[in-house]
Image (cartoon, rainbow, N blue to C red; front, top):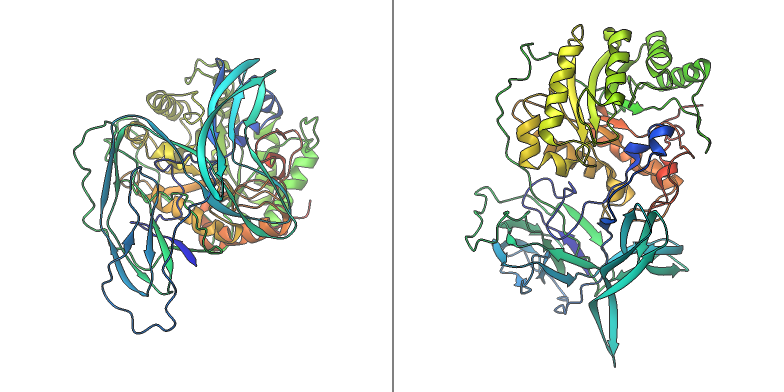
Length: 557
C-alpha cells in the first residue's frame, strides 16, 4: 500500500502551521549567546508550547487488481467520512486522474480527538508523542494525552486526562510513548489533536495516481476565525500536477499527519517607514552552493565564553575557503563587530548583522537593544554589511507585537544613517502568514526573512529536507508584494532523538544539507558552523547541541 499527500498548492511540504497540528521547531534562536542561552525564560505557571503528534489510521482497502489497464480519466475516489478537519484519506484502487472535491467542516465548539498515525524509526529506543510543557516554577499540570484501549481483539485510540506534578522549573514531556526497535520499522503511536471553533476547508485537488491501491491525504486549510456556518470560498485555481510527496508505509497502516497547503496571497502595505529609496541588488550566493552560515563567536564547550580574535579569524578563514560568501551573526557581544567584522574584511566575506531581542521591551529603550544599536553605529563598517535583521523570532517568542517590531525596524533605519543596504527580521513561516504580522512588517522590510527547519516537520526525512525548505521559501516569496523571501536559518542535527520521520545522525545531516543546498542553498543561511555544548541539552529532541555542519560543508576547523 502506498500512502501519499495531495496538496492544493506547490507548498505541500511547506510545513506551515496547519489546522489540527502544531508546527514543531526548536528554540535555538535564544541560544546564540551564553548569556542569552542561560537567561530566565520565566512565564506565569505552566504553558504548553507544542505537542508531538503521531498515531495510526486504520482503514479497509479494496484488493489490488491483478492487472491494470490504461488509466481512466476521471475516476471517482472512495472517500472516508469527515467529522473533524483531519487530513482526509481517499482510497484510489486504480491508476488514473482523480478529482477530490472541496470539503468544508464547521466546528461550533472546541473539539479534542485522537488522531493516530505511523512513523518510521531506526534501530534503537525512541520516545514518541506526549505533550511537552515548559514551567517556570514547581506546579501541577492537567492535560489530555493519547493512549490505546484494548477490549478483546479490538484496539482503540482514546483521549484521557492526566495530572502531572512538575517538581521544579524546566521542560517536561508528559505521557510519551517509548518504543524499542531491533531493526528499522514502522510503529504506531496515537496522539491528541485539538481543534478550535471555525470553518475548515479542504480545497479541491486534482492529481494523477500512478500506482494501484494508493491512499491520498487531502489537508484542510487554516480555519476562519469565527465559528460561522458560512462556507469558506474554494480557490478557483485548485488543480495541481502529480502528487507532491510519496511515502512508503507497510499496509494497512498509513500516515495521517496534515500538511498545510496554504499559500497566502500577497499583502499590499504602503511603505511609510522611511524616506530612503529601497536598496537595490539581490541577496544570495551562487546556484548550488550555500549562501551563508550562522556564526557565534563563543567557545563550543559547556562553559561557553568568548573566543579570542585569533580563534575567530581562523573560523572565518575556513568559512571563506569553503566558498561561502556571507556570515550571519545574531548580536554584538563578545566583540562580534570587531573580531568577526575584521576577519570578514580580511577574507572577503559579507555580514548579516543581527539585533537580538531576548526579553519584553521591543523598542530602543530596552537596555540590551540600546547597547546593540549604539555598538553598530560606532562600528559603522557598512561596506561589509549586506543585510540587517532586527529581531530573531521575537514575535514567535512573545517579546514583540508586530507593530512594535515594525516601529523598531523603522527606528534602526533612522539610527544607521550611513547604511544603504537591506533590512529584515527573522521569524518562522507561520508567523509571517499571520495577517497582523504581514500587514505591519511588509512595509518596513526589504526582504522577508524566515527560519525554516525541516527537522521539526515530523513527516519530512533527511532526503526531503531541501524540498521542505524550498517550499517554505516559496511561501515567503508570496507574503509581501515586491518583497522577496530569504531563508535565514536552516539545518539538520547530527545527534538527538527522532522527530517522526526526521531522524538525526551524521549521515542524515549530510544528506539533508546536500538536499537543502541543491534546492535553495543560494538563498539560505545554514545553521550553524559548530555544535555547541553550552546550548540546552534537555529539549524534547535532545538535538540543540548538534547542528554544527562544518564537516558536511568541507570546512576544516
